[in-house]
Length: 330
Length: 255
Image (cartoon, rainbow over all chains, first blue to last red; front, side, top):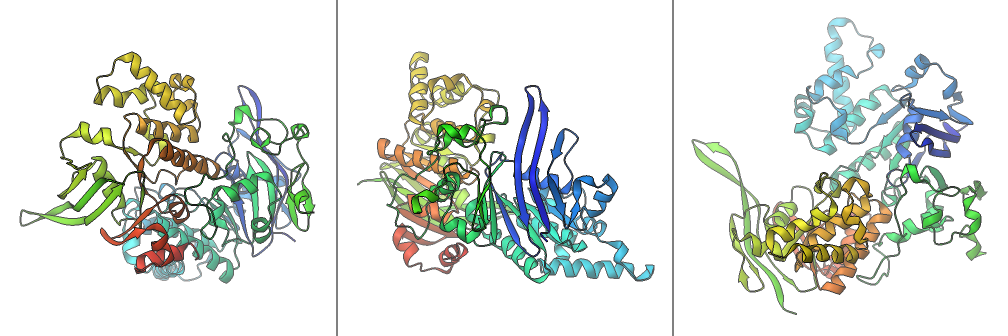
């Protein structure tokens, strides 16, 4: 049974121009012990999907889905208080911009104390301080922070973004969640520290058996760290499947364009030659095209593309396109 | 090819406080020496805190150097000669969203460098703005828009257009690509490469994306804690890295 099973998730909101569907029938499957990469450019609705899973979208948004199941439990049927119990304990989330998710007025140590699971503590009250300190020390060592004393005494602005991110990850794994949602964990982090964060996720996944939903805007990042990928464009799922398969042979023109747009180190690309790229830019939410939303930018668009394509499957590789790139091979 | 920019023993120290009322300094950069030729691209790579942004800021005059000399087309570049500097060296900033004034129209934004550094009449300035907009792949009508009305990729194009306004010889791009989306990033790379061909520009490119650096640069400089640890032809540096720092950067890529 998949840990996370989402079928046809739509997220809508009312605007002065009528109801706008920001996320249009997205499918996601995450098996236990897997790392899933959710890739899409800014404005493609990947953060919205993550927030819908956590249940932290505001009342402005309407969430509807054929199936939104976590571990067999239908999340949309749960009451607010039941959902609150899952939040943070079973499903944890690491947000964008780590330093802004920490309270700037308080030391890191104090904030860490607040986030410890005190209901798991079974020592008498006079030994609790020591228990807490040891828990915190253990968690910080687990995420690779060695000088825990300095980190705990300092305020968030005194730490680098990479360190803040590690502290936040340590806080989230204090409750030993089964699913960790990481929303753009490395965008504001220096290049050297990015790898450390990804290695940390990999380690958590292997040692603690945490399933991870890794949201990122860069296809390059997820190549080495994930087993499966789902690519989104403008709120629609474009392609999903095993990372290896997608990098070897993408079926959707959008994925193909993304893979071709970056110069790769081993490629025999001519020095300073022009790169292949999609023309235009991501449309705004008020001006979404009908049917396949890639339509106006797609090099292979036909008249049929004004109808939304249905998800098709070929050897564990899902894609939604009327004219997939498979035809070339066969 | 003739040398466009020559930098000799450039250093920068920051004041870190006092000890017995004597100011204390910490060396953040240097000594750095390098040459840049016409229509060449020099990339500066290194970890955070290695001084690459400081070097870029000194070259465009946003920061003052402590010692050393910069020779531009055979002429000494003085610290105080702003007009000479800003006509020759322009900068593209990291985040176009925050580097454009939200209360000015794009036409006025682009006109500003012409107003400050030249005495061109208004009519010519307008024409110049239109031609530069066309050069970066936008329409003259965009001059009437405000920055919030266009997309992120178009904003970065405006930032490039603003850098081109005074027909500079050198453009310094400080992490100008890292905040852009994937498909827009390759559009901007294409734009920069095309402009280099057409106008004979030289670029000084600060980045940590080795794949992009390898594709667009002729020379690479690797900085580590303010020191130049490797400087040479891009192909050579990446094929046979000599210093540990360079190897580490390549290793991070998984190669």
